Image 1: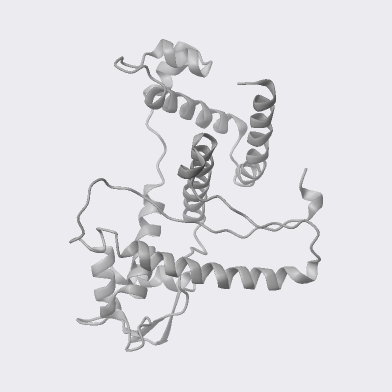
Image 2: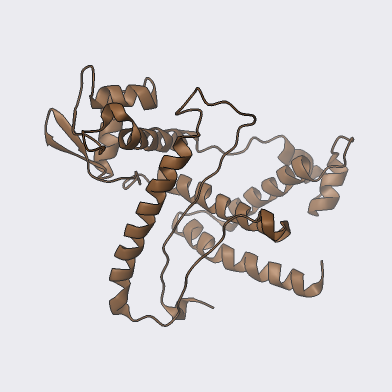
Length: 274
């Protein structure tokens, strides 16, 4: 690695860490805890991805690659990674139910839109929707989750209506932080791929940005970007779901892959940007 490349990488890491450190400090996570997490990831990645072909990865080699001591490497290899499985399961359950409601013909009206459902019972009901897309989880728990997030509304105690096209948790910090980990890691993985990929194999990585916008335009920009992004994501969701074997078990093919596209909006005063 050349000097200029090294300097650019260090500057990029520092920029990435600024918002992350802000989140850590707001949630009472100390530098020591962060350093433990970083050391653990250095060791885990070195063990899994930086070995010599045909040879078992050794503690000594991991120590050389990471700059940690052999004793520290041995200690970290014994620890299991922290898990956000509970938050992940709740988020995935709710998301699957909303997605199923939007595209499953059994739960759409005559115009192809999500129908107003009876809360429970057989047939076209919210209870059956949850059973189909969330297994044996109590339908009331999913209903409460979606109501808290403002995704559904109940015209009366016996009916439920979808009022938002996507599920974003509102009151649960653990689920919001789960999304932080998932979405940020996907973005960085895309950039990591593009650093080495030839142009024909690069992943989509685009943004539009202007740095001298007046305050008065921001609200319209938020609304416009949300409208266009939601329309695009719904089209892509329809296309991807038609090829997903969880949705269509009859689909054949080799391998099992995760693919998608993420869109996010950003704004901040220029004084906040170094």
